[in-house]
Amino acid sequence: MPLAIVGASGKLGFATLGALLDHGLLLASNLVLTTSSATGAQKLQDAALNGALIRHVNWDDSPSGWEAALQGCDKLFLISSSRIQKDFGDAPSGHGREEDHFKALEAAKVVGVQHVYYSSLAFSNPSKSNVMTGHERTEAWLTKEWSGQYTIIREGLYNESWPLYLGHYNVSDDERTEIPIAGDSKISWTSIADLGTATATILAAPSEEWAAYSLSEVAGMVAKAKGKEIQVKITSRDEHEAYYVRQRGTEEPFIKWWSKTYDALRDRECEIQDPTLELLLGKQGLKPKHMEATVAEMLR
Image 1 (spheres, helix red, strand yellow):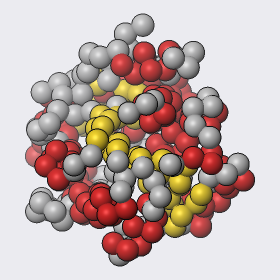
Image 2: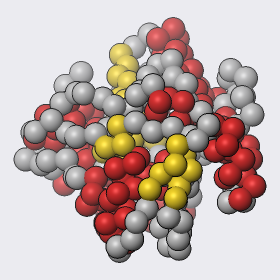
Image 3: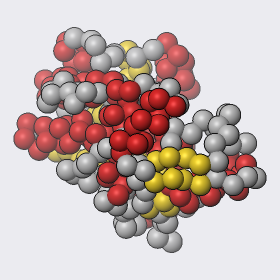
Image 4: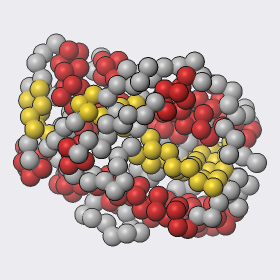
């Protein structure tokens, strides 16, 4: 029976799909790939030509729509909802992004999915970061409500997300030489491609220690790539919020939701000493992509 990948055309989903097929971990004919858009379906055409089923479903669809999307699958890789706006303003339990996840999980129950793999995030649980709230609530649901097998995959923080952490850095035309951020620490970064390969290895299985870099060090990588001095300025969270709302024109609900992430960084929640990613990649003859390489590519 097939594995369903919810959000197969997104960043992590597409990287995982590519790794599953490129490394011969699963046959395309054993995959059900969901997408919410025509553009996403187009990205999945190569897999479809090799036997994968593409099913259209989105987070606003009815429970019966989700049941139809997952019908016939015994495994589900649930990639977390990208609708972060649902989390803004301290959304009450059941009304943040977890509401999207619950809909898919309840449908999985009905159609008989046996094993759920959920893409959480590599912060502590509980975390000071608001970005983890929906993940924590989904993990709690799986613990209490899911009677089958489940695997929570604490996906590393994407290498490619460094601009968000580094003061909402604009890779196209950001000329700041001092970047206010409300906290800093080492972060165990991982590229999306590496996460896709590691995740694929986990999904396909029967039921050098990788370095961490602080945002100050990432700023140094940006400075090297751009050939000019760039440094971070550690501020209070209030100062951080005021700067990005008033001076950078970023939407206030987003900034207030995001800024607590730096409280988590101050507590070193994202500095993870664990060789699992490297071991999983090593099984495919690969090594983790270096953070500096990602920064240089994105600023080219």
